Image (cartoon, rainbow, N blue to C red; front, side, top):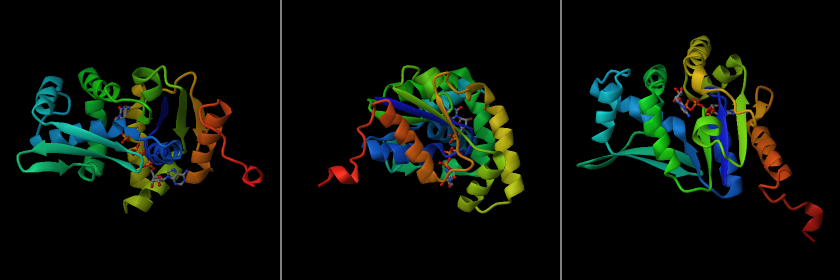
Amino acid sequence: MIVTIDGVAASGKSSVAGGVARALGMPYVSSGLLYRAATLLALEAGTDLGDAPALLQLLERSPLRLEPLPEGNAVFLAGPQGERDLTADAHTGEVDAGVSALAQLPELRGWVNARLRALTPPFVAEGRDMGTAVFPGASAKFFLTASPRVRALRRVKERLDDVDAVEAALIARDAKDRQQSQPAADAHRIDTSELDLPGVIAAVLAELERSGLKPPRQAVSDLS
Ligand SMILES: Nc1ncnc2c1ncn2[C@@H]1O[C@H](COP(=O)(O)OP(=O)(O)OP(=O)(O)O)[C@@H](O)[C@H]1O
Ligand SMILES: Nc1ccn([C@@H]2O[C@H](COP(=O)(O)O)[C@@H](O)[C@H]2O)c(=O)n1
């Protein structure tokens, strides 16, 4: 079984995917982390984020390993001294600002998608186009939104920053990612602006129960 959770930037995709994956007892897969890791390597190497052949060459000589665990995803680069964990460095403002340029390139989308499709289900996949381009036959699809202000307020709790600047950066990233961020026609849309994280996870799990993809939680009265 593959469950897809797509949505706009900082809408809660990875937090919700993690909670749903833990409840289902399966891993979740962060597609954005692969785009982020590729962008980080390019920034460090001074490779132009719009130069597809140079980026693919860089990735060919930079063996990346995505670790998709229910409690969080990590990405590692193999090297002569062992593996380097790129995960934290892939979540900086610099990577946020550059990643959409690389993600526009069809060659780079092909590189990411091949890695995702090579994974063995079951898993929850989160990103922008998991339910449309990558796993169109997924068992259930969700698309998360929230107002830019709400998303910015949530993000500044993680990374201390100016809320207006964060909001502007999120709106700019949404605009650059618009092409690959269209909800699948059969996706369940959830506006999370007024919901807390457990509330969003519960809404997804309720839909999975409703459609028979998850056994219902045992009612307290059934436990005696
Ligand atoms: N419904 C919610 N209520 C309150 N906080 C939330 C909610 N959903 C997510 N958050 C918080 O918002 C922040 C962004 O969430 P998360 O990183 O999961 O989003 P994302 O869509 O994966 O982000 P990005 O697109 O940048 O990778 C986190 O601090 C998370 O804990
Ligand atoms: N399916 C996807 C996932 C991500 N992207 C691009 O990567 C950026 C970072 O993703 P996050 O989920 O970590 O925010 C995102 O801004 C997109 O440019 C993508 O194109 N498709």
